[in-house]
Image 1 (cartoon, rainbow, N blue to C red):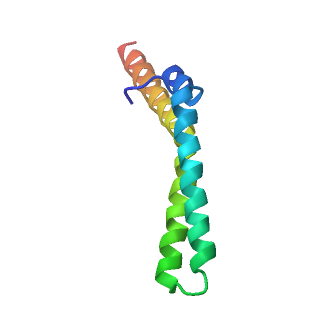
Image 2 (tube, rainbow, N blue to C red):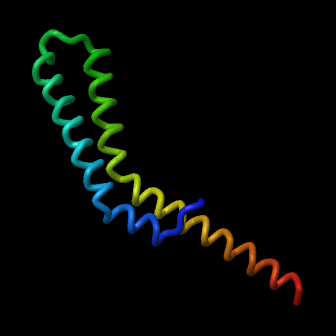
Image 3 (tube, rainbow, N blue to C red):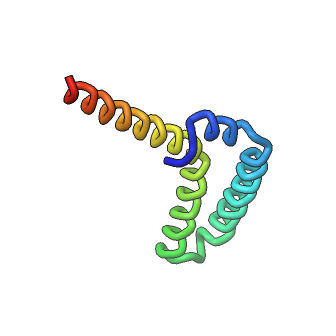
Length: 90
């Protein structure tokens, strides 16, 4: 990870992320509108596609927390490696 946990938290709390999530909500509304308008005429592939799009958009809302988790894991791995190196020197 190149970003620190603090940087990711700052991003999550930023106006930029708020703008992104606002746009993602517009996308979800459009997907839901398509589902409502086409549910009787669309085949299962189209419904699956729209459902998958909605799921992907909803998952993207969690990206800051996913990145924080990755950064924490990465930090934990670094600490383990350093501790093992230090123990090996003793």
